[in-house]
Image 1 (cartoon, rainbow, N blue to C red):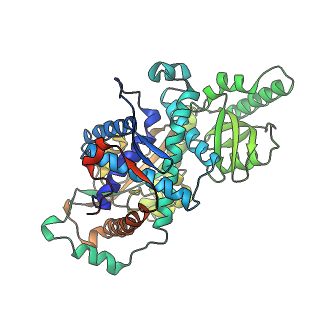
Image 2: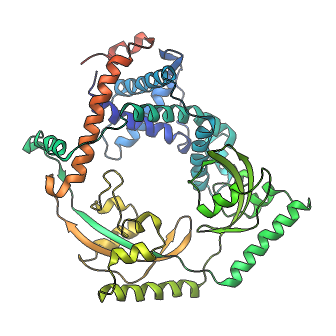
Length: 454
């Protein structure tokens, strides 16, 4: 059996394949389908392997080494093993959790097509309901596998001594070479919308509510026609199930104050103005639909935000307030403000990251023209969900390309140490877990020697 570290690299491919299944048009050509493995009551199809293998090849084209077909087969077989063991160990996910993920991912897909289901059908040859049904089983399995892995590795931590030991175990000529990195921060200001436009949108939503209650209009029809949420408009405003704490606080508190079927008055969040109807409340999760109107700031609104940030920039440069403190107190971007305005690498939780990790090409090229210690003047940018905003960027530090070392790369090495410790625990688990279930592999895959001892 391959090392667990390698297997879970492959599982990342397989998991990604499952997650993006609804985001990629169907492959041309057909696979002669058949069952190639059974793990208790769980079956693995040839078509499953084909889809995941093609996804892995696609990733390899982006500079990631692709696994072999046998690697993919073994990874998918491990998924089935974990699902079978989860059933034995009474580890499960609820229908609401599954639908929450289905709805969330489907909303992301719909945003790519501007909420137009007709375009979706043209691209995939399937309706929204057909596409949701297709990915539901994939998502359920991925949630169970994630929960099972979390249960197996629960409580695993690493100490500084273990990090040092891990680092010292790596031969000097095998230490990874890290590209140049930077610490970059931002303070964001969202333009305040003028009162007249706010009142106009509130009154429009109030009129929608009156028309619905009077029987003159249908909520879903109005959402399809007027809602500016591209992910839900085509679904009549239906957002699907979300757990408590996952939607904007103002939205959630309003939704949960409603009786089933009741429609709210307009409520404002950072995304705009909503009219909400509670469809179902299942305790820890709830389903709503809404009509969203997004007010576009005027030129004067944006200029006011620019003047605000320009004044704040002057205070920072004059030493009246520290950048990190200003970001925590005044930035409208919660993803960075809690970290003093600085961007974070999600894989290591470090403020040091490759500039390309920032993803936004405008941001990347802006930083590339700056010197360490520079702060930009207020700059406009487009938030995909919230429209035009203004920000100032701070280039705090730059770290040249270098071989890994404990002083500069502790957080990265800590994350790698933790992954290795979890992998060792998982490897021991697999060796015993495979004895607790019935596994039958088609002779065509005997060559892979899947789940065999090393």
